[in-house]
Length: 376
Image 1 (tube, rainbow, N blue to C red):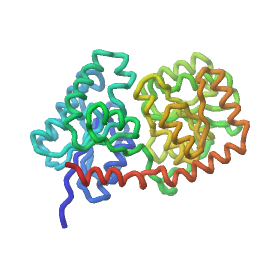
Image 2: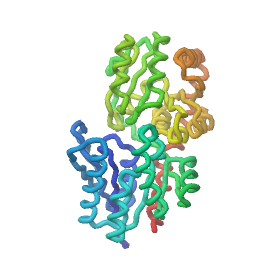
Image 3: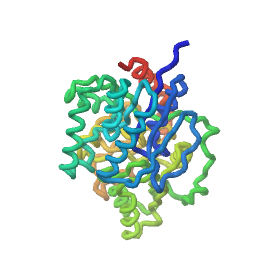
Image 4: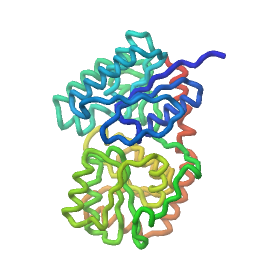
């Protein structure tokens, strides 16, 4: 029997809540590939749960800024030089320099997974000098790639046109978790009032322009609804401060990042999931966020903005409503009107449960396995 190629997958996250890289590593392991997943360990990182594939996390002096990215890539490069691997999988542009250089020296194949339009995120578009550095790295490395994929067709099309690389698509759809793997939580366990309807807004990257601020401001007009944030991000603490300053602590709750099983248990207790990314930059315009599919897997309908990829899913599978105006009173009015139609909500919930049979990793992973099997 032919031995499967050895794979090292690198990502700059701490691995705990990074569902995309976990799904990929798990599927490759189950397909018989020896897999090592490499990430980082922050001071505030949660312990990593037991996984069937090998894992390594780097501790670094720096946790953000240019020195962090330089230190991570240097550490990763030196680590990769000491390991035997037939395929090196770089997750996003911030791991690609180390992966590409190590593969060039060792003769390994490179596979690239672009989780987003990296150079178009607001954290870079608002810092043109830093963006210019990353754009130069992208222009140098991406045309050299032979095996690449990303999260949706819109982003794949942009990369194909700009760099002439045949980007494939592997969407951010979640695992189908067995019922016994999901904790048996209740609303009372989470201290949610029993007489209120609940909106959930989840994400490990709740950053600027994701619609979180607008959701909070809408709560000033929704005194009978609870908004629950689950996750973290660059603006998470600012959101807490805004809630406190507006006296909305009885209407808005914050929960930290959760393991996938617990996140699913929390999400399915809500009435609606919010996906309110704003069309303020190319990355958000063409994004297809994890949370949309997580809501569908949890069997709850969605209130979403009209960015193309999200609107396409919501309308194709008829799993929720599209809101066009995020001004506080307008958003609150849309939410209230949505809750006033229980028949439509029932239909959306039923459709979400049906869509979950199709929009899950069991179906999507075949695309990833095909890319790896035919890597050049």
